[in-house]
Image (cartoon, rainbow, N blue to C red; front, side):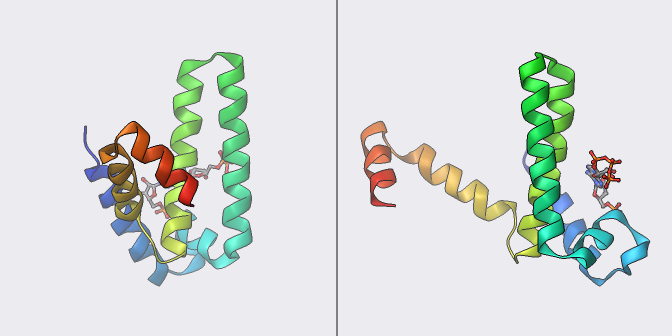
Length: 107
Ligand SMILES: N=c1c2ncn([C@@H]3O[C@H](COP(=O)(O)OP(=O)(O)OP(=O)(O)O)[C@@H](O)[C@H]3O)c2ncn1[C@@H]1O[C@H](COP(=O)(O)O)[C@@H](O)[C@H]1O
């Protein structure tokens, strides 16, 4: 288990930018534009919340995967990728508790 799957998926999402809209789910989502991608993220976030409130662990993992996947689609659409997010998480992890609070206040 590693972050390699995120990078492999990000590579595929990048390639889908050249694909015809009717050739794949991701290509079709790109063709519908930013608002459609954001709508999907909203839906998947809601489904994640419902699964958590239901106490259904399997469903929670399933919906969270949908949410992560659509978040990767959003990042790709915006010219970003998982590396930038992982780097930010690593930066936060490297901060001490006090430094992290200070960094958050500066934002
Ligand atoms: N990981 C995923 C993935 N996770 C979720 N989904 C799609 O995201 C959608 C989730 O939407 P919903 O939960 O609302 O389910 P739905 O009602 O069936 O979907 P809609 O009809 O509402 O769009 C479904 O259509 C899923 O198929 C994904 N589609 C693709 N991938 C990966 O993305 C890559 C590129 O996919 P394609 O563009 O389809 O080739 C592939 O390698 C896949 O492994």
